Length: 194
Image 1 (spheres, rainbow, N blue to C red):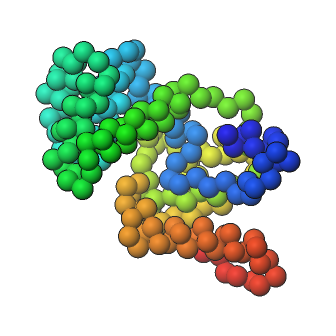
Image 2 (cartoon, rainbow, N blue to C red):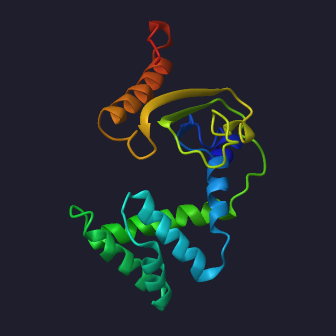
């Protein structure tokens, strides 16, 4: 979508800034490499990753065996949501099912997506101090330079991939986003940027 908007600025004039929040296309491509298994095994791996990302402790062998025994995607999703429900009492099973569905679609897009050209504009990367390292060869900019010809402005926030958008860290992220936006609106006011 970003490349489409970038190549048609008259059609999408409202796109002024591109922000990456502790991620990048290169990170998603690397992450998607984990899901090369075909069919049901890919689906099970994605479901298990979803459970792990949420920080839920679960017996991987038993969980995956149970998922393999179920006959459909919807049954596997329902079972996973049911297992997660005990850890997330403030969410309904339907909410958990929808969250997984969105996560699954994101992963499926990452597996299939390959940009045809680089983005020709400056971008802003806001990353967690304890950002996930997928290979050790990922740059400080999470390899955004592989997909962008413009300047890459990096802001580092305390916390992990999960915690940098919560509490005080979320306020810091919001402050950066607001500061950038207001700084562009009032360029003559010398607003400080973090």
